[in-house]
Image (cartoon, rainbow, N blue to C red; front, side, top):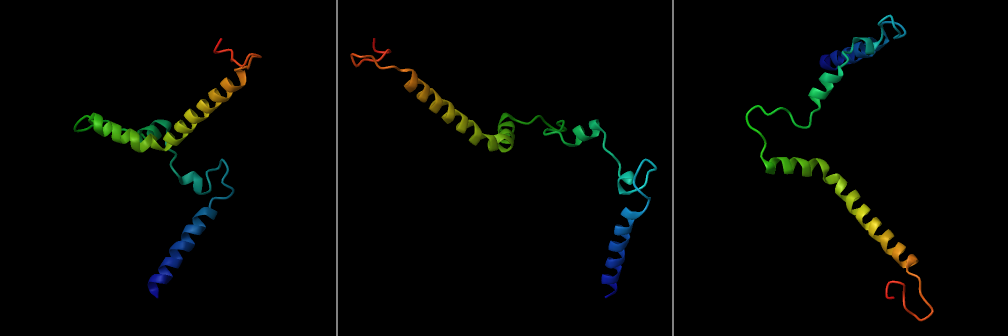
Length: 109
């Protein structure tokens, strides 16, 4: 029972934190004013796909595994593009291949 009451008090205090400080304008109030904003350099350092090797350089196999995990979601788009281009090439060759009166095509002449 007491634990529930403490949790309610904590939740109430968290809700009230956001209401303190006025309108949240340039005077520094509101919940966003207390949050530390990450610089671009800190963001890049935290979100690098490969961190600087500390012990050893990754092997080719490890690099291939990483690339397969990261970029395999685009494989379907690549094959769809190949099929689309092949289909367009076939349709274009069918349209541009004009028939002559003697039954031969321009490519057979």
